[in-house]
Figure (cartoon, rainbow, N blue to C red):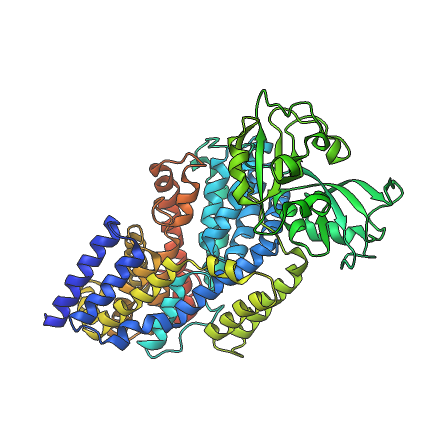
Length: 600
């Protein structure tokens, strides 16, 4: 064994220790590995830094921004709500609807984001249908992982695999939909398995996300159509569509009089006052809309003066001096230099006009004011607590544009009008330039840890190839598998990746094992693509433990799952997925029979 190989293996062993022990963050470990390879001369600086300009790193960053655009325009939320409605009341129907829909979402967005979005929706669905949450959350998390196999761009492992095939194996890499047949087959198998083996799923209700003071969905407020508004003369139905199904109209005032004759098709006019009920996101969207204004801010906001203003919410305390008094009587703008713009009440009716509402214990007030004055509010004995307003403005009117940008991006990459990295980068820029997502949120959406980790582990693959370590390990494996049928070899590389990904990320696993798979394929005189694809598949869809994928960690607490639950459900499932993956890879790239056989 040559000195460069020994040096690389020592660096790799130290890196594996840090990855597994988590003594340092994974992105920091990746950077340390990169620097160690430069200092020891295993790689030159240009090779070590090549990961930052690599196609996988650029595509991953762009996909985060595009996903942010879909979330900011309310597309992912609406899809999640539709899934919840379509799931019906039976457990089997819920699994049959949720899994394909979640997989389709995960095909073009980040699967952890999809899991996080669907988690509260399915918890609420399970509670309303009196189903154990644990029977739905694990199939959903599995579907999110399987959805990453439907396209090349949704899992970094496949981008890294394609990059290695293009750079080290001399092939053309993978097309954006080249792995889709395998993904469809795995999704069908996964859904079928979960439907047939539901008895393996535990029956636990899990931690319910009950409605509480900090998660509110029915604020009462008053909305004013301002002069020069873009909503002027447009029907109410358009506004309702833009703000979502949680936006409800309770009254319509024109020229100071209630108009019961106005309906969804009636045009809005400047000066109209809408008495509405809206969720937190919609309330913030109303505040950010230049053509609309919250009535209280329009009337009293001028008294607050200039400077930074923001929304907070305050809970009326038991025994508060405000109990039984109307909002009009309190005159918050004078007493606290804040304006009451919304009210939430757990039970009971609220007066038609917000200013006439008499406060009760537990009412939540949405206040508009200066942060510098909030300390007075927080210290006042009339309030139980003061917390930030948890809403997030949605740009729902731009939803069609966001979908168009996504479609054009995928089409440009698929038809090879542009290189995939450039097409997705252009899509991310278009999301920001068109206003679908603001620039600050776009930067926040990018998970820098994943970007840095990918950029840092790519040089590991280069070093493994350049030092001859991949050929060395491949020759050792060749002695073991030389008499094996091809299907058996493909199953072996899948199994190796499936086990290693339980302690490493899918990206790191692919980078470490793909060069060995490429060398092994060369030694067998076969194309490298099926071997590398099976390696990436093993790293992505091995559903063995809760620590193997971040999505599993998200559902672990809410579903009250135990480690053994994942092993009991996932071990037979992963074995089936391994067989289907190897079978499909052999059929697609090696001309093997469509039906699985172990005969070469």
